[in-house]
Amino acid sequence: VPHPPLRWSDEGDRGPAVVLLDQTRLPTAEVELVCRDPAELIAAIQRLAVRGAPLLGIAGGYGVALAAARGLDIHAAARELAQARPTAVNLATGVARVLAASERQEPAGEEPKRPTSGDPVAALAAARALEAEEAVASAAMAEYGLTLVPDGARILTHCNTGALAVGGTGSAFAVVLAAHRAGRLRQLWVDETRPLLQGARLTAWEAAAHGVPYSVLPDCAAAALMAAGQVDLVLVGADRIAADGSVANKIGTYGLAVSAAHHGVPFVVVAPRTTLDPATPDGAAIVIEQRAATEVTTLAGRPIAPEGCTAFNPAFDVTPPQLITALVTDVGVLQSPGRDGLAGLLGR
Ligand code: MRU
Image (cartoon, rainbow, N blue to C red; front, side, top):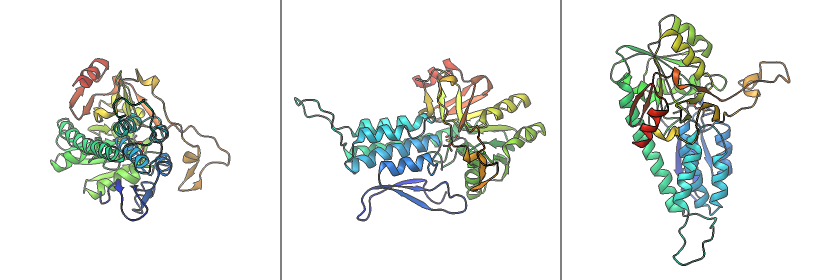
């Protein structure tokens, strides 16, 4: 990926900023979006200029650093940033981690008060550390995931899980890249990922940039492709993994898992430990973001349904653990991930 999806900037006289590669403009334009305060970053998160679970955590962390650098109320900023989107657990945990690092310590013996301004140096260091750790996690997931990829693999993926979604080369996409580099990838099948087309716009763009052999398909063609024996492995990412092993990921993931089970195709989820959420007991407890009907009833800004048409537009769905062949994390592979397996993983 030519531009970093996110960078911290403190140049010029306009002060600190979080600079995003505006993902809503890809693949036709590579345009930077400068966020100078948490409110601008929250707006960017909500319209998906920056997205993908681990990258949302990093963005939220830098958002707290931005609030600290601007002398704003870090607690208020953290609360609003954490609530910008509900499903990816990384957003809330990334924000909480940087908030904790930026809270000023009271000098010994002084009345405890709740200072609203944070320590900008500590905040930025914490955001940078989170970003660096996610990059290390990407590399580890690539290595562990590669052990599950057969020679000459035809891999199907959904949404975007590459450098545009994490702080490194990716989750599921990092495994795809590792397979390509190892000479094991015959074909990458890219679900277009309705309605916002993260597959067609973003994954295809990343695959092209890396010389990965790929083809885009409508989401509704995936089952037919499996029936035709053209898919050896499904690799997807995750936005939140509940304690029972249920996986929330981009809408359409559950349907893919059902199809994969029916056709005997391994269905593998790739996610860093930062996406595991032991505080959410099961899939039913995961909050699913509902988005505007217009994302479904318009295409490239033009109406494709009658005026006033309503729509069911959840951004994510939940795949139960029984449909998941394996979970690849940054500390290893868990076969048939369920409650016990996840508890063991978190203990590591
Ligand atoms: O709505 P998005 O684009 O933020 O959804 C992203 C996904 O569903 C990804 O598959 C998930 O975050 C995993 S990315 C490593």
